[in-house]
Amino acid sequence: MELSTENPVDVRTPPEGGSTGRRRDSDRRPRRSWGVGLLTFIVIAWLMIFVVPVYLTFDPHLARIQLRAGSAIHYPLLIIHVWTGTIAMLTGCLQLWPRLRRRRPAVHRISGRIYAGAVLLGAPALAALIVIRGGDLGTVSTAVPVGFGVLTVLWVWTTWRGVRYARLRRFADHRRMMIYSFAFTLSIIWSRVAFIVAMMIPGSDMRWVGENTGWFPWVFNLLVAHWWINRTARRPLQLPDRFA
Image (cartoon, rainbow, N blue to C red):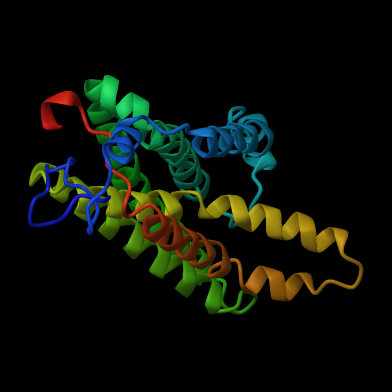
């Protein structure tokens, strides 16, 4: 059962209609986090394949996007965005582990602050990259910068709200906002997957795929996050013992 806004630290309230002692004991038992483990593996694998070999060299010629000729700031902004995004991905995975949240609350708090800092630092760099990309509207569809612009606003807003809810000890709302925020963080993964899959399909319209990368990845992740929040709404949050 998800924590209620009215009683944000009550994790022992049984589901409506009552339940047996066996059911309550089962609810208190930590659930296996195989899904979180799989997601963490995917994130690390994606970073090792698409990020580390390209951007750890700090060689502009290896960048996966076309850099604007004569712009000295384009690549540094890209580096800031890439590495703050990398930090956000890794610390975001830590935030999802319920056992870590329950047994090592200090690690959860520190990694959460690092995550929020990475988002709030990386978002302005992303906004600047969008402005630079918007200057190429003669060759780039307006759907691309507009889609990424909406993503940036929602990314910052959900992260800020998540931090604020944590300070107010509204942990159910905090959990919901941070899941949405992390869904936005991971949206870049789908954009790469979409291109790879499209290239493997004969006759694919790569221009259409490119024009929709500003929307499809984060909208899809948002829907998945919303589904997951609703699916797990009745599970008890595994908070540190002093909150139980």
